[in-house]
Image (cartoon, rainbow over all chains, first blue to last red; front, side, top):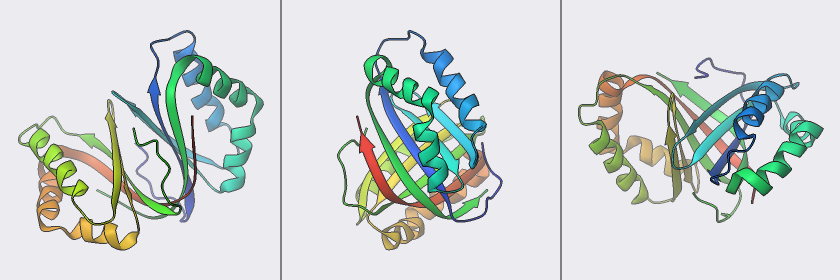
Length: 103
Length: 103
């Protein structure tokens, strides 16, 4: 869990999804995408959980970093395969983190 | 999953947590808190998933609605019990949703 406080404001990409029953390459691509995201400029962290639905929240320094990550060619390919194979539906929300506190 | 688009901007409360091994009243309180949140003014939706960590994202019309929910007396009591019993650690981020798209 990313508990350390970052310099505010930063950005969160909230990715919620419902999976299909198709596993073909999913786990490999999911872990590769985490590895790839972590190597992007402006990446701050990522948290993920799944049972009925999946929620992955990634954190970024600014909107430019998010835009570049969305357009990364390997990520674009994964997004396409995601639509065809792995996801029944998904939703992406881009949100500016204005406040945070932890216990 | 909340796929319908809402009027932008709105707010997300991203609650990430690591549980203790203590279950005492947890499930009852968690579902009561969802029911109670749903009845608050300005509530727009909620999504939740847990395995190693838990992520709950609730959506709200504005910051006032979030503030009122945080101060709700029954919710305050649950927050206190959460710190004492159910959560090893947690983090709350308040974020303004500026953009969204779905598949």
